[in-house]
Length: 83
Image (cartoon, rainbow, N blue to C red; front, side, top):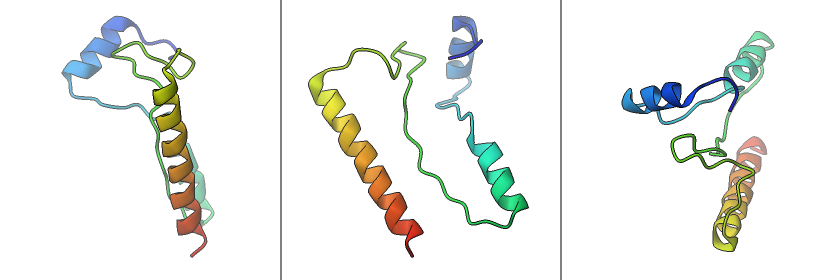
């Protein structure tokens, strides 16, 4: 990702961490400050433990599943926001 080492990543895995979020806290803070509604959908892009990244080569089947999941995520979010 950025500056973490393999040692850092393996330590996090041993400690039970399953994900890293880089933007959500800032988005929620701004929304709270301005009294805005907030919500989130999350998707996994990188797997640090297996050294698989969003730009890594993936099979056609995995690419199809990733696209279907992304489209479903957007559909759910837009449905929620339209209420």
